[in-house]
Length: 437
Image (cartoon, rainbow, N blue to C red):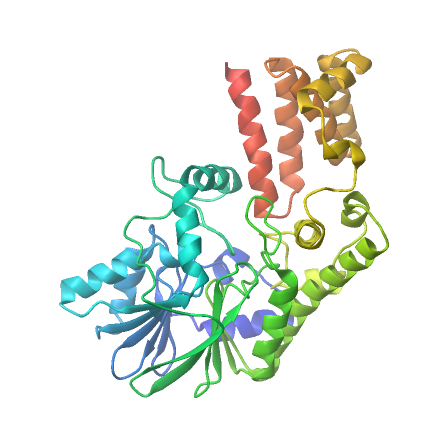
């Protein structure tokens, strides 16, 4: 088995990743023992296991697609009863495999594990049941054509299976919940569960004082923090940063994330937490500063950015989410949904506006051809605006959609984040459907 701590140390210390997919974004379904009585199965998400001497504590259950195999890998390490299953949060790639954990207990004749989570996980699971179709559709767009079904990189979840419910029916609901802080004890192992709002409002990070280890969940994901997802509910970047600083204050020697590699060394752990918190704090303070000066959203998203010395770090690459999306979420959190443009407050239908612009340009086909010229000049952002208007003005015009598909194909090639690539791929598929008739 690879030495995961050695790999992470080399990447952080050198600042170089030679093979990101196979070094960081590993989904091997293999188990690695990180220390005495501590192991991880690298999955979607990981399952962390702690042997207490009186039963296992597991952190997360992976997804419905990976949970069975991940649990089988965990059983290659220990066959003891699972006493406690802790959800770091309620995203389905963390709770979706819980049915496999319960089935394992039933098969072995063990008492089912006690499931522990923050109290807000209940509301999240209820929301997922109410918005099943919505979540399936946005995840098909977010992840469609970017990775294999059921896979992800970073902090969100995907279904990818037709007619599959977003929240599996056999997900274990929490038996024990807490508000801000709770301690759990199994055998001789005692841990503190702390609530934080960051990627979600129901996040738990866990401090294991005897090992000076933190089960951090998705508060650190080896990518730029997933604090701005354009298709999901509100995220909390400021509180996320405060949580990271609370973790830092304990001087952890081990950082154990739910995605990516574990990290060891007090200074190394402090460095990655500090840089992640600093990046989020910079976005929050810069955005609020411009908001307080009366700037509109358009000005802010084209002004605020993260210093290059941070986004160039191997664990802060905007490979999943992007700082620009985080800025939009900060605006939404503090300023509401209106972007500051008076015309967008009560807008005319997009198709009506597009028809007028196309008419001024000499027709939708002429507008689309001009969009192609703008794309050829290198301004793909502007080209997308123009070709989108052309397509809204002539939604069934195949020639327009041929240009639209080409423009978004080029835009997708230059996109850095999985989220942007997924949205652009969704646009390409829309146009391909029109072209094919």
